[in-house]
Length: 152
Image (tube, helix red, strand yellow):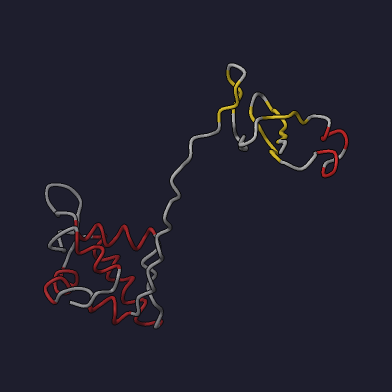
């Protein structure tokens, strides 16, 4: 079987085993050359040989987390964490509590896939001293539990 490709700056593009004359406009078809069988799109010509691109491992998509109803989010915190959130004087913690109260008033879920939600929950896990951090959560592992809505 014959394999054809266009060489653009030494890179194989439009690799096909179909005669280019039958599937491309004549001006494009004229640009095709014969390449070794097994040549892939993206192969580069070096020293007279076509080198296929490195195979990459497919990225396993991370399934999105389901949205959290106000009660699900509330129950994902321990009683001690809820008390610490409600009594905190930290501006970021107060903002989180305001966001939560707004979701209760509007009866709207919280999307744990949003960067802003992930960031604020992670903030709650950072120690309050010596730098910025809520100091609310006992450990960084609690972040994923809360984002998943695992009741405590």
